[in-house]
Image 1 (tube, rainbow, N blue to C red):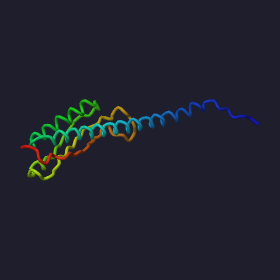
Image 2 (spheres, rainbow, N blue to C red):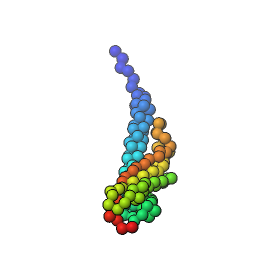
Image 3 (cartoon, rainbow, N blue to C red):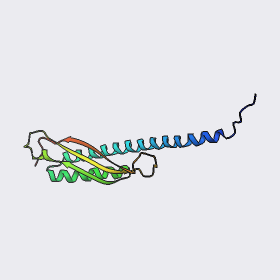
Image 4 (cartoon, rainbow, N blue to C red):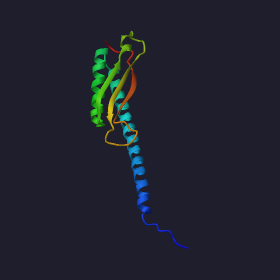
Length: 140
């Protein structure tokens, strides 16, 4: 009985296994980047909402929220572009003593073009929203 020659089988295994492993690693990096970016956006939105809730009026709240959220994103160095901060200050119109909150939504475009993983878009818009209660008895 003749034994089969196994020369070249390692090359075939590598040709099949290496791309699959590279795809797996790319998907792990994709998941890590999106999770890290979402967490950073949540932190930025929370910072913006907290800053806005301490303001005395709606105009100041919008300015404070934007400044805090943009500073938070730049400090975290997550590589987002087209950062947009939306502040809902409708509850600032309520009478003193009536509970209200301010809501901040932070969104940005995350660049994923360097991953080169099939099915992964070149960029992805991500967003997070947080709210904070307005001081019911704030001074106006």
